Amino acid sequence: MERRLFGLQRLTAMVLAPLVLVHLGLVLVAIRGGLTAGEILARTQGSVGWALFYGLFVVAVAIHAPIGIRNVLREWTGLASRAVDCLALGFGGLLLVVGLRAVWAVVG
Amino acid sequence: MTDSAAGAEQLTVRVWRGAEEGSFATYHVPARANQTVLDVVTEIQRHQAPDLAYRFACRVGVCGSCAMTVNGVPRWTCRTHVSRVATGGALTVEPLRNLPRIRDLACDMAPFFDKWKAAGGRFEGGATRADLPAKVNPASAKRRAADAGIECINCGVCYAACDVVAWDAEYLGPAALLRAWTLVNDERHEGRRATLDKAMGRGGCGSCHTLGSCMSHCPVGLSPTEGIAGLKRMSLAAMFLGGSG
Figure 1 (cartoon, rainbow over the protein chains, first blue to last red):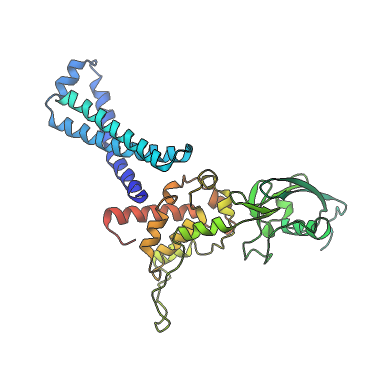
Figure 2: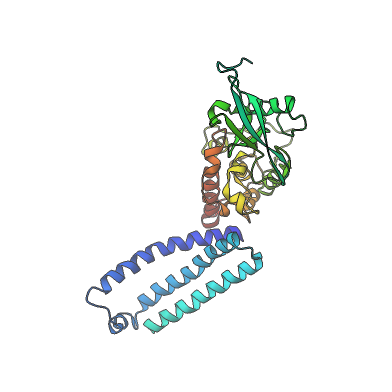
């Protein structure tokens, strides 16, 4: 279990590294001529590419972040391990739902 | 032993007396030339406090049983000259950190060795006495990795130096994980995969924050940090590339 989580966290970090760079690059490019909701939606709506890009981003984050949060909670709070696991799982689920909902909102 | 030029000089030595609850007692010991901290503790025990409990055996840095906290730093007392660590002729000697205190300067090493076993540190050979000795290439990468950590004598200095051990009771500690690293690189060890699983399991390598205290305090100059990093790499390779570990 610990070993698998350790591996998953490293794997998702490897996935996230280029995605974050592309995302930051996109932000710099997108705001050059002013940023409006209309501009963003014009670029993203109906785009399968951006849907896949940010869909993968959200999934990777929803796996990566809760594993780290779990470690922090386990080390720094006196919570029982089951409680820590539930909190981390809940956090991951929240990130997944909120993130995918946001992706759907801009590409759907 | 010859008295130093300043023969009348005294060391002021604060020694922990008691178990978990206790206090420091102050002793005055003549400062001598070429005096180790273990010499000082022995002098106190022989001449001033016969009931002082402490642990030692070889006195020459082989057995690893005399480790204590000297002026806040975990050290082998037999290999620590007073002149190197005393500040203004003052010494403070305590038992090793992160281990239960039995009495005075002696701590209970049982949790240390329990974790050593929990990390899969027990060698499991597959050969019988009818087999020829295994031919291990000393120049192979795996053997050299094992050799780099094999000189650990389990003194507990790294365990006492590690802050992660202090705040995470489950953490197996640097010595146990370095032992696991030597075993997963030992081709004669039949349980390499089991050792890797245990070392990467709960309280294992994932808990290490790479603080590096273990390698900066190891009296032999070993690097458990490097071994732990190696275990992580090996585990990832086994998981994603299907290596045997």
